[in-house]
Image (cartoon, rainbow, N blue to C red; front, side):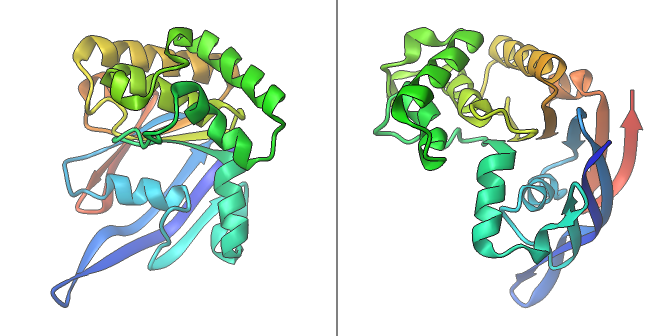
Length: 227
């Protein structure tokens, strides 16, 4: 079943007055339950496409649909609600709030959803237990390793069971063992929770585990391979 579709999506930036196509006429359909990697060299448009899928950026032209609904038709407040309720984001730089503990970072999204403190605290602890990071509850980001911060970021992304998780180079700052464990964790969540995962990555480990790889070159889809 289709969950996301892009139709002839363009993103054009100006470089000293010269138009640059970061994404060039990309049409892509993502099915519910996909475990999909968007691959390609640096500058190929991976992150830009991911940001447009997640409504963090808007296309210069073309359309992005979520379950058949055109995101361009949504007001700014509706887009913010869409991002909050529907998508979990895992950023390359983790984007944890420095002054909050791991538990508070994970709870933060639930706080924005006005979930009562007792409920959100219980849900956050349950997710931490699932991910094996209970011992990090009271630690702040600067007291955690990169792998630990990434697990906290994943917990924050999935705390409200979003149908879609978008991950921008999720293993870029991790050693190979931590990256392998992280990929296994996301594979398990995809299989057991049915979460649709879409990655931007050029990590061979990620591409090996992806069930579908969309390869971008100069902003265009060069290949779309289902394993």
